[in-house]
Image (cartoon, rainbow, N blue to C red; front, side, top):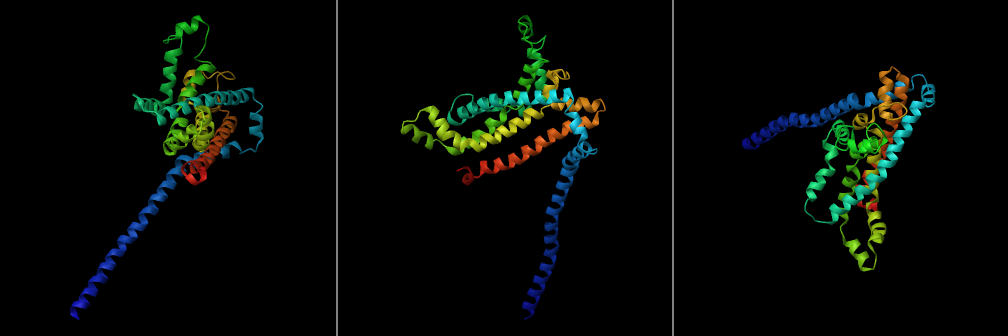
Length: 293
C-alpha cells in the first residue's frame, strides 16, 4: 500500500510539472502568429491601406482629375502596351522552354534552367544597365544601331526588352512541374491513335496544363505592369513618351503632386489585389488534381 501511495504521489508530481510545459508549448505558436501579423501589418497592410486613404481623402475627384491629365493617360497606355507585347512573347518562350525541359534529356538542361531563373537572382537595375551596355550609344551594338537609325535605349524597344527579361521565368516555371506530373502516357496514346504533334498539343497537353499556364500568365502580367527598376534605367523617364505608370507615380510624388501620385498608385494596388485573388484561385486548381479534371 505504501508503494502504491508513493507511485500515485510521484504521478501527481509529474503531472503538475508537465502542465507548465504544455502551457508554454501552446503559447509559443500564438506568439509567433502575433509577430507574423504585426510584421505583415507594419510592412504591407498599413502602407497599402494608406495609399487608398490618401487617394480618396478628398473623394473621387482627384482620381477623376488624374484621368484628364495627358501624362497620366499616356503612362497607362504605355504600361498596358508593354504588357500586351511582353505577355504573348513570354508565353511562347515559356511553353517552348517548358516542353523542351520536361520532355527531353539533353546536355545543358540544368544550365538552361539556371538561365531561365536568372531574372530572379539579378537586380532589375543591373538588368537595365546590361541592356544599356548592349544597345546604348557606346554599347556593343550601339554603332550599328546608330548607323541604321534604330533606337533601342530610351525608347519603347528598350523598355520592352527590360519588361520581357524581368517577367520571363514565370510561365516556364509554372508549366514545367505540371508537365512532369502529367507524364507522357496520354500523349503516347494520342500518337498511337494517329494524332499529329499539333493535335496532341491542343487536345491533350493544353487542357492538362491550362491552370498552370493561367497562373504563369497572371504572374507575368503583374510583373510586367509593375516593373520599375529595369524600366527606369532604359526608359529615360520622359513624360508622355517613355514614362510607364510606376515611373509616373515616382515623378508625380517627387513633384509634390501627391493626389495624382496616390491615384496612380491605387491602379497599381488594384492590379496587385486582382493578381493575388487570381493567384489564389489558380494555385488551388493547379495543385488540386480533382479540380484540374
